[in-house]
Image 1 (tube, rainbow, N blue to C red):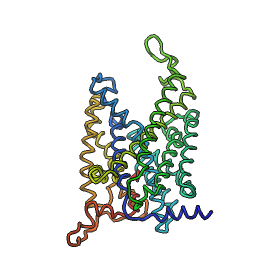
Image 2 (spheres, rainbow, N blue to C red):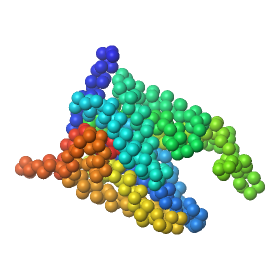
Image 3 (tube, helix red, strand yellow):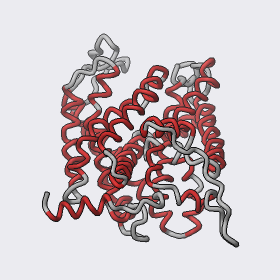
Length: 416
């Protein structure tokens, strides 16, 4: 290793172990809200999706608006944040003198086997299994991505994004597992963008204070990415138009009722989806960061979502349970607006519950199970009661106690 490489690795490993990164917790909460909103009509089919109800103007407008704002973008943001969290967990293990690679492999094996696969059995749109699989590919690459130039993860992301359309266009996708494997290159690219973000000094725990230029640049890059994504999708329509018969039915449907696959079209769609997802992720990430840097009012308001961002595994799996219990017996009968309303109400309750929980406990319920199995020992759950100094807040409660959480605490959420 060269002297410059050694210096970079040392700087990364020696990141201060104190405070979390507040804007990342808030962004993670917003990403999870977006993912669950998009999942609500997929976990249990809405009446409109089942053809039992004709969508009215309001339903169409709400559905189109949420799809435009969240579809693909919330998942992409969550993937970027997972990549950043992998760096924090790696540094934490290295700082304690442990084996970061073994820890990361165990961490995502537990996520996939204990949480992802069972969830996939009840909901085909599960993200945990796929994220865990991709993280297992990312793990052996981490020493390379954390060494040398801070731009190295971006080069790796560009390579992954370049490979993804070819894999998606030509690899067989005969069953759900094959689909998960085919999407690994694209997801790995998003993870690498997160690794780049975590290596930026502005985003480091205990790093230099803001305001920074980077958030505004992320917003601008995000907008450019989304525009390029739309242009790519339009190009697909122009170069590979769908042929329709006199009744408006696509011509040449296959046995599965789908139009025949066109590799060129599949590649353009993949590139367009990547650009729009990455653009949305960077836009929302930069916007949250910029707003939290603007002053105490914005930071305090958005910061109320931070406890939810530290309990995303519990929130994600809990949402599927709630949807199945409340709407499952009425599949195909519940209006789409009612489903979105249930998802919104769920997060109001969970966000309030997360704030109450965070004052008393270090980790969410499922986050505690995940971290304990990762570390192969039960970890402390309840926050210690500390007698405050005269005139000062209690060290184990409120925002002060949350900021005192060690970097090892980042093992507790899928985006962390």
